[in-house]
Image (cartoon, rainbow, N blue to C red; front, side):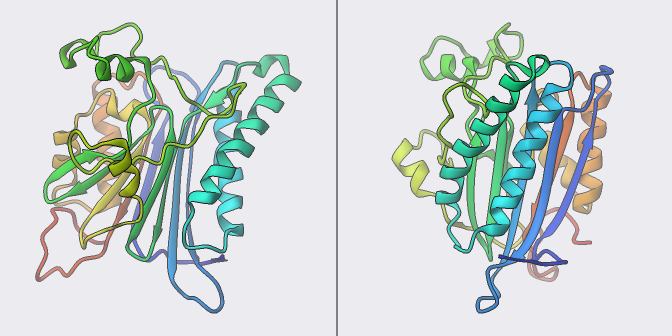
Length: 281
């Protein structure tokens, strides 16, 4: 693909180490492209990664994730990124594991990843871990990814109820991440409705975005402390950059116990005909 100096979407990104004093182990990137010299279709690639491991190892792992995926995205010549994600999850996970084996201080390091790829007005996603992807549309925020955590598995099996989630000791036990001994499969499920089957969720890949839609990618430092309704409320009357800052401020006001990263991708809209709540600018 060919790098572009300007995205066809409205974009914003912010990160903050939080209030705990820990190093910021989140990494992120937003890249704009056109498909080729012969095909000027615009593309935006966004990625968020939350590192796992002490002694700055998490920071190293998340940086590997973002840098390698961004390079692979630029080399891609297809409008469909799913094969790239399939290969990329394997290659990136293997690289993190290799680097961890070479340096004892980095042993066991890994990272979550959430990717959004928008070709024109068509959305594709891939993810592993508990960094989330939301679709904000018509005043509602829907989590279109699914957490890969012990708690999520317990909920799906009926072992836990919603009221037990926030205080459970296994809340942050991640079941799928890059850097594990066996590279994980990318999760291609894109959930647009309650109780969708896995087949239907995977078939939602390549969904058409609507004017005014917002895609949010974020680490768990935000979603542990800010709920879906508050995410929507925070966007009201703000530009995406203002909203990204406000979301981080809200998480920090509530303790900011972890690193906080937010990326917002907004579809343009006709100001005279469409009122999504946020402000272009």
